[in-house]
Image (cartoon, rainbow, N blue to C red; front, side, top):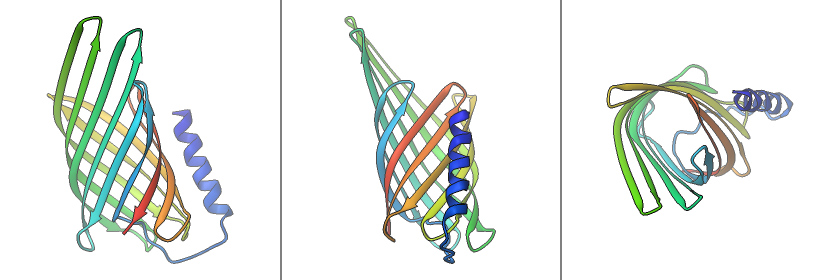
Length: 190
């Protein structure tokens, strides 16, 4: 939680110190990829989103992390596919709600034994995104994920800085009970 507060404070400080005041709205059409790290291990994350009209968007996220310790290999992959609607609160801030299909796969191999478990579920997410200026975009969301009748709550925050009009770099942090994930990524807008 301390990491989350640090990202929010840094994002607000950077937005207040940037002098450009462009009339920019959050970007909903992009592909991004980056390095991710959590309690299981480290790996990569790929994401894409496409705004279909003024309100409706589709998205997909995939991450894969792995680690090896004491001759035991552990792999975790997560997939999220869905769609949602955005509401333009101001020209620079959007609120959104989304529904998603969720899939988690865990593989453990070691000492002549192996285990593989898949869980499928659904997610409901609400959040907000703001383009503070032409360089800085940030947002937060809260998701309720359901796997086999059990609910998990996920909080996610992100901030990204545009290097060019089409390319940004960013960081996102999410927390789900005792499972925290940090991702550093590059974002290509289209």
